[in-house]
Structure formats: structure tokens, C-alpha cells
Length: 172
Image (cartoon, rainbow, N blue to C red; front, side):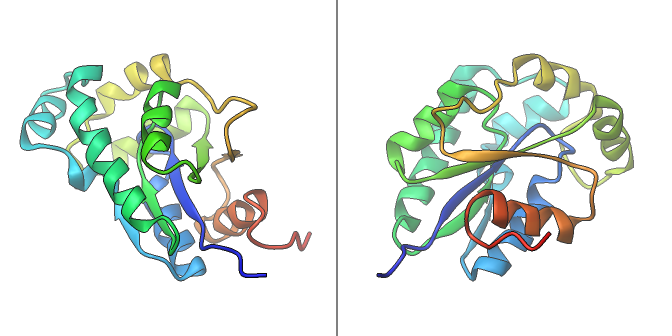
């Protein structure tokens, strides 16, 4: 029986490693990768650059664009990074791609803040970490996906992601 290629959204707050793990996961699965931040409007990027958090209204068109990407990759697979902090955001993405699974990367605030301090090539300032943590709604038991704690190397985390999502057998 042919198993359809997976559609995975790597989610979490800034600094959790969504892009790093997402790229490695896409490579391991042989599917395309999309960086969700690349789909933000110039207005959203400008707003975040000033340290202002986006509102749900700011995010709505962005989530729809991401949803279209996911829908277009249903059947042949893909991996996307997207904060997807609220259940409502994930529901909106699932309205486009019901088979999408979510991989929630989370970790201690101190580690996330340290990672953000070391990052210089991103528009998201470290000052927005606390607002992201405040609105984060972890995956519910009825949501397809898995939650992993960051800290191990990206390759170890990628392998654990494949196992947690049922895409590779456990080896340890």
C-alpha cells in the first residue's frame, strides 16, 4: 500500500529551531521546504522589526498564504516552518490541508532567549519572545502531531521528529 508523502508544519516560538529542523526534516523526507517567515507581508515584517507583536488580523492573510502552500503540497508532501502559536491558527492551516501534522518544538525560555541573542540575520527581535510564549497554545490531544523539547543537536532532533511523527522506526 502506498503511503502519501507527509505534510508537516514545524511550529514553535522564535528561537526554537523551526527552520533548522524543518530543512533537515524536508531533506530526510525528500520533500520541499517552505520558510513561513518568507511569506510575511512587508507591513508585518516592518511591524515586528519595531518590536510590535502581530495581531490576529495581521496574521490572517499570511496564514491563508501558508494554507494555500500546504494545500498545493498535499499528496506529494512538504515541510513548512510556521510559529502556529494558537490553536485557531493551526485550525486555519488545517482548513486548507486537513492531513497536515504539527511538530511543536519547545524549550526553556532561557535557552530560547540565548538563541535569539545570537541571531543577527532575522527581523524578529528577542523582545517579542515573551509575547509569543504568553499566547502559545500547545498542541491539543486531538491534534495530529508531536511535541519535542529542543536542546539536542539538530540531527538528533530531526531523527526524534521522524520517530515521533511515525515516519521512521525508533532505534534507541
